[in-house]
Image 1 (tube, one colour):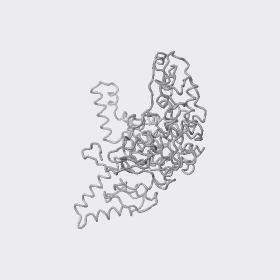
Image 2: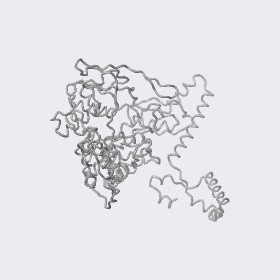
Image 3: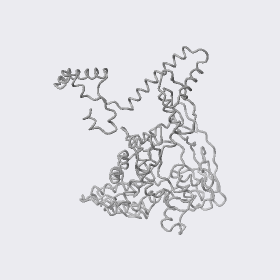
Image 4: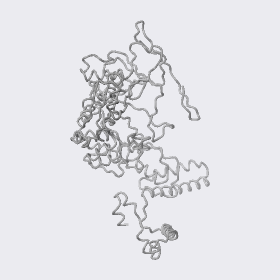
Length: 567
């Protein structure tokens, strides 16, 4: 076992035992004998011929978590048997007898030894607001066979979110530390500008935060966070770069991140993070701060100068045209260029980036600091970008096809979903992308001095539809100085925790407060969202201007057979 232990991870060493129990010895001997019978193995015969000496060279691998689970199960079975005896022999109120016996367990104090009198019963009521005392009580009751599931986890309240000096422990880190993602700037501060809401790095404080948060990653045997069906659609190697960050090996962490993700500085800011929704730790605790780790790794890489142009050393001579410069078009161009092809990207707008440039507000992703930086990097690596080039209108598709060996269509997602109800043509009804694109373009062109945007200043704004785009519209309208902002949502208000029909590892449909909601609440004194409402028509004045909406409350019904909901 010593030689085997020296070849195992440190955390496995405590799981290795000699084969000494009679039941284990007999089982092992039968297995070796069967192996000899079916294979004629000379080694198996040699082992059996000198069994007493040979058995000492075997090692039993017995995970301590599994060992403890078996011990707890044995205690519980014993407690249940004792409970059955009490109920069978009780005189008078049997439940009162059980209650008194359960209370006696608590009153015995820390360090009690399990005994047959400690039986299963409903868990004892909370007796203290002190997290440490409650945690001691939890362990005491669990060791006594009392049920502990469902208790209010007040002992989590004192788990540190940041440990100074990088002195964290990776083994069991998910039990030692609490979740704490990168923070946003204070609401009253960020409402005064269009800069990123994400708070800037705070040097040592941020380093300690990231070390602590990376220690929470459990390095799961089956990490659902990188499962492309329920977790990261890119298959990011999340456990690997979390481990590297914890070890302080940031450059290697960046290399592993870039192995699956062309633009982590984009996804780390705007992705809804399905990886966190499918994090195994999220089954019964707050998940790992995966999005925080992702954006921190790539931002540090740029700060340290590790991200530099790497043009391909060999060109294939093939030419590829990419139509559309959004994230998908840029990613396709990046990959094709790395393979040595000559890539030209055509963009109908005046700046490269598609929705990352004009659709996503500057508050979520800085255009000059983040998006343009990546465009410049790709240009330095050999990718050609052509703006104001709407293919099929400004650029003729026929010569483009003739000059290219392949064409990639990445035409974007700006075609909106309309709401074809009465009054749709009134002045003042806008698609979200019209509003957001014009705002960002004017901001970049002139800091809004040109007035070429749809201003919400002094207006009563209604945003129909929730989600990230709705939040972006709310945040933009608040910054314009809207008189009021209301967000109408057809669906019901989500619950604080997963509903029965929304199990792990699927994306959690739970109540959240995004940056725009917090800002509207700060500005107007209440959350802007109204749930379970349907817009019936837009109401206009005699000049064709929008003056109101007609809405109705809706009541959702859910069929017993599990079919689709209706209202």
